[in-house]
Length: 310
Ligand code: SIN
Image (tube, rainbow, N blue to C red):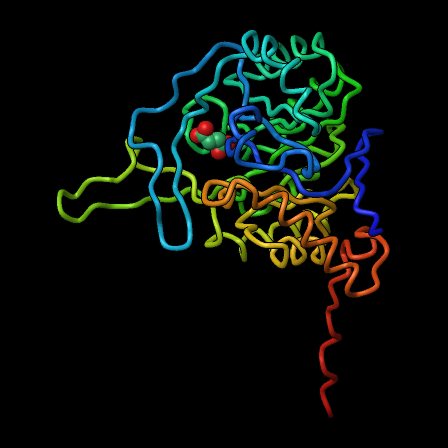
């Protein structure tokens, strides 16, 4: 048996493959489609203080090797989420609640309310949504804001905190360090890249909000490089996200240094993708005589540059 477990802030997950926020709703919509019991956990759609209807349509566009979204953090709000929580805790996997806010105070209010709910495994702070006017990238591109939000959350919970970082910065290592300084247990990287799709026929953007966030296989090489930068900047675990569709993709992130991975866009085409990826990682380890996935984390080999003959 390969040891696939992953421990974060004292919470033990059965494996290192999670479904990313926004791809499984709150978890209970996909029960007929996916073997959720085989996941490390479900990261919920972002929860805000009040319900949000989200952005005007069109909110999703397919692109070459990817998908643009501009959902605008549509969600049921923390009170209705708490009503649903007992049912989610019976799904047979761990629930990580993703929290978003338009102000620093909103993150704290949502988290404080969630603290009253039993059974939540961890929080993921979304400081990186590219589709909202207030909060979102405004916070995620500012290391000081990232540190402040994380610190305020840290002061109010003993549950593990993951901070989800944006790739839309020059140096993601700086925001990763800010999250670590604020007391995060892990960072997850990357959220989507700001992108556009244009309809030549009527010269309009295909998205209602003009720009959106690009995800899917098209962003995997960017995500790998950003994950590597994060792992070099911080000591806390980095959770890799970005175009992971197969176990081979996930293994690349783990080799680069990701302690765990989240599967996002691939779940729309194949809701069982993340569960299959968890199985595929275990099979790879078995075939290669690797007893624990941990042994693969950060095992990237970088050959020394050739010596110049003088
Ligand atoms: C959205 O709701 O617009 C996407 C969420 C995100 O990218 O964080």
